[in-house]
Amino acid sequence: MPATKQTAKKCTGAPAPRQELPTGKRKRSDDDNAANKRHTRSSHRKQGSSEDAPSAADHMETDAVMEVEERAVEDDRHNKYCSGCRNGGRLIGCNTCKRVLCDACVKFPAVLRDDEVFICPRCHIQPPAGKGPRNIAPYRAFSSSKTWTMLEGGPTTRESFALCNSPPLVIISMRLSSIPAVGDPAQVVYHNIAPFLGDNVVYIDLPWDLGDDNTAGDYEERVEDLATRLENGDLKRFRNFAVYVTDHSDPVRGDLHITVNDGGAAEVSSVLSQLFPPSLRAILKQGKLNTLTLLVCGAVMTVPDAYRDIKAFIDEGYFAWGMGFGQGHLQPCLMNPLLQAASVSWFIHERRWEAVLDDMQGVGAHSDLYLLLKGKPTVRYTWAHCSRKPFGEPSPYSCPGCKAVMPWGAPSKVVMASKAQAKSITLTCQSCKLERVYDRKESLERHSRGPLSFNEHGPVSERGDWYREVIV
View 1: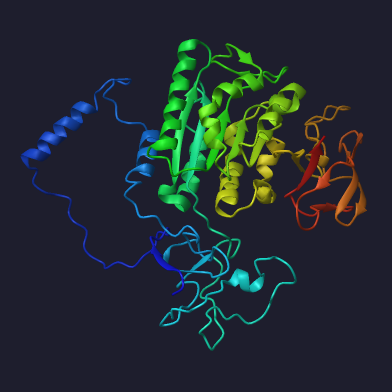
View 2 (view 1 turned 90 degrees about the horizontal axis):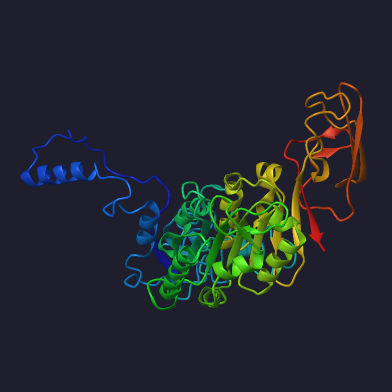
């Protein structure tokens, strides 16, 4: 019998019988009145009271891990949601890959035989080995079928038949305690990816302050408690981690702040040693999909000593990849679109975050991005626009000559190296005719797919282009 299962649906549509709404009026019992009085009293409690309700983070973690031990383990070979519509329902698994399709995307036979073989559309079009041309030919999904298979409906997402994995994942937010929890990018990622993972995702908030022995000791105790839960407790089945470190950095030395109110900073290597004690590192070593995102201002990546510490930490092998930012005054909230898309790309679709960059013009306008890999050179990604940021270098708001504001229009001259690559761009002030020439560095290679966003005649689109540069 082919692999089949029934899962809950994620979409917000389903048939239901129509009925009249209730009036909302009913007699209150004595129990109701007593409960209402308790609620009224609790609403007047002072903030900070030990009787305060649990935080949103507490609810997230509790909801995600409750009854983990009692839940049946699902088939981990196949995806949880249909690769066609990303929804649940009645699913059937492909015999050659992890994808599943639902009966709303492909018509199932009336009877599924025990020896039935199902091949998903992706494996039909491109065999798993990924070699050779695409197979554009009539599709027979089921081995017992004597007719060709028609797929139901049409595409409901931008990409058809992508993987839709649901690995157990712990999202850890390590944030300097003075950085607010509200708007924490790690929480944004949690809420974005949770519909794919269900009870396979947990959010852990680890605010820290290493400014004195008491606060540092408190953080150490909470990390040890987390390590115990991961080793022998309610989180022992989780071995994939997305870690977000949110902090400030010294703009000259690249040191990481260790306490609140700009009260002190220390070398990157020593701070990382305390944030990631041996007990936590030992568990991180067991994960294959782990990621580290440094939501820290750009000095930590651009000051040589600080960067060397970051790279050495990545090279120890705790993470499949790390992400850093080059903006000297990074605003983490502006990175949220990238972080959300990156988590889905990596954990759900099995692709690194650079695969989503072409949709991240707003992110690129704010900061360059760094991809750090164990034992490999770091890659810097920069967004470019032929007028606003030629080859990744921002054009000034004011003309250096006549001081006119935003005087640059479309490039006055573009020298093309090829159809897909420009060599130089010239901008001319529309007021005083001052020229600024931007030359593309040889080390800068175009990352974006498709046609260049401009040519020798000027802009073709406003989306811009992403470039990559290997950091030696």
